[in-house]
Length: 116
Image 1 (cartoon, rainbow, N blue to C red):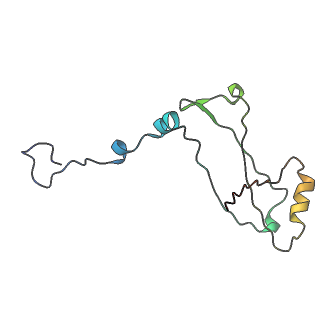
Image 2 (cartoon, rainbow, N blue to C red):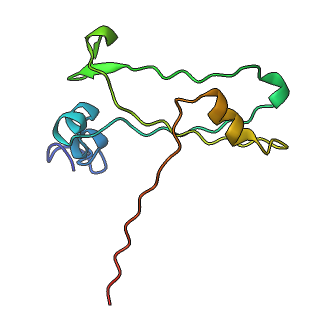
Image 3 (cartoon, helix red, strand yellow):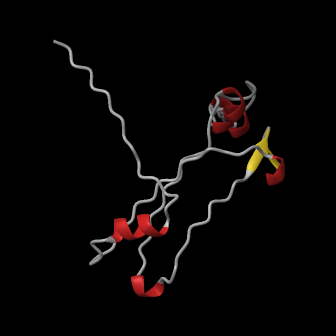
């Protein structure tokens, strides 16, 4: 689209752009009940380089898009799924469950509807 009839042909103004056709991140969170993005990452380590590894989960809260002090936030229920595999370690699962007893295995519930 040209802004005025006097503009040269080819001197166009875009009608569609990401700002005009997509909601902002703030609008999506407020109006569309959008949750945080699900993150996925994969890393490979040599087991000889790890000694007592850990994974820290940090709770960053927001209120209407603005940061909030962690002390002011209610407790948050969340899910963290971690998949591990290690060569030549057949007892990996049992070793982890014995050491970190607060971890819970995933319990998958499926309902299958059979129609006859």
